Length: 184
Image (cartoon, rainbow, N blue to C red; front, side, top):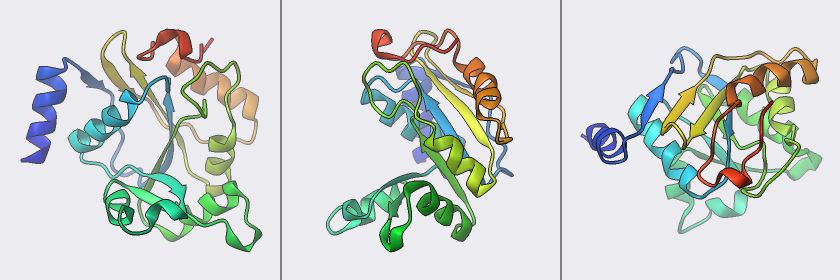
């Protein structure tokens, strides 16, 4: 029932569409979600997750997962990030991939909703360390579509891999276009 409501709101009321798909056999991946220019991106992700029926996740500092909101954040796909024991963020998140059977991590490589000229590369190194593909996901407000790309397995040649990944975002417009990263 919830899926039907999501579809009705997303497709009929909002006029959006989902292009492409994520193979449900891909149980672990890093989803490179761009452009991230507005808080509206959050509910687009929630609708996409609800409509596709695929578990999609995010990480947050472990303090967010305490009472009273912890259960809600877990229900929404959240995973607390514990960096104790001297682990850096990449190693901590790679450890989550290791212990979870299904973990599709959504990351906004811009790192902010403000204008940036360079992407943060943590998402790439997480995928490399966890040995999982990166799936580019474009929230295109110009076309009113969520475009799910094909998996790219990181080779360790970051510049070459980023060239391939960025092609998915050429011409994509965020909710506030002047704040969006420009992929070339």
